[in-house]
Image 1 (cartoon, rainbow, N blue to C red):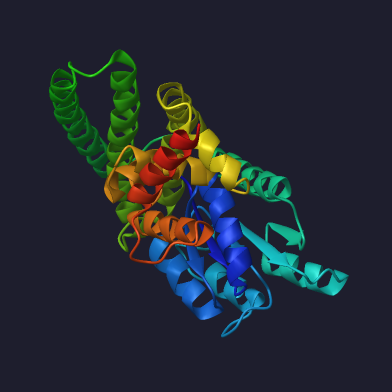
Image 2: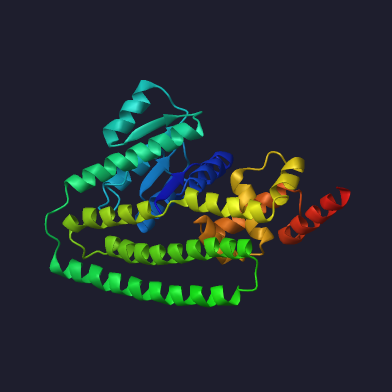
Amino acid sequence: MQSVLIIEDNKALLEELSESLEFSGFKTYESENGKAGIELAKSLCPDIILCDIMIPDADGFEVLKELKNYKSTSGIPFIFITSLNDRSSYRNGMDLGADDYLTKPFSEKELLNAVYARLKKHQELVSSKLPLNIDNTLQETITIMTEQINHQQKMLQQASSTRRSLSESLQKTEIELKEVIIKTIETTKTLEYLQTQLKDKLLSDNLPDQYHPIIRNMLFKINRIINKKDSLKDFQLKFNQIHPNVSRIILDKYPKLTQLDLTLISAIYLNLNTTQIASLLFISPDSVRKYRYRLKKKFNLSHEDSLYHFIQLFQNQYLKKD
């Protein structure tokens, strides 16, 4: 999964950008000021950075200049997001090495098009610079990682087989839905394990500069394996087949719910825990807690109220009226 660091002091816009990008398959990190954003970029080494210009502690120009001078972050694609639309600000950003410039207000489509375009261009640039031969030590590391992943996949397959045998009493449609969830979680765990290994290698101080593009290329290929939208679409389709009334009855009363809200509601309805939901939605457990909190606000629930019981009770009350 490709990662995006968003540096923006407008909390409402920060949440909106994060939600749009996460539902489109990205893992997001957030910062509300320049200095914290710089530290996050250096420690996390994201795939792309979105940064406002007018932010506290260090403005966007200072953030870009600092990251360009740091080895591990100098090659990360950088997009300015700002309300400043004068030519001098645009030129100043480009002179410092920015890759693109989005002027507020911009649509979700414009945002995603810019992110996809910059990631693609960066990948083409990285691929063109890849050496023909990989160092033996690095090759051995990759081989060990591959063996570890294969072993983990076998363990996951055994666990999946056990779960399937325990589900024989379930209806066929319920089994299919559980299989979708299990497959998604297993794939995510395996790929995240490999990503962690490669990220650690990328941030290693003793990694020669010429191997940075090799690692980034491998991470890019891993990210392309996961198609989050298809996985979630498959999950939601099967869920709606088994429980056709859940989304409909809630949307009738809360028509402004987003697709991410509905998918989260479906997962909560199935009583999945935080870790399972995080794997299913390709986001962190902290993001799950954040989205649950936002969902409670939309339902006018208190912090202590249970979303699971609310959804169950709400549906039962609605069906009784029918």
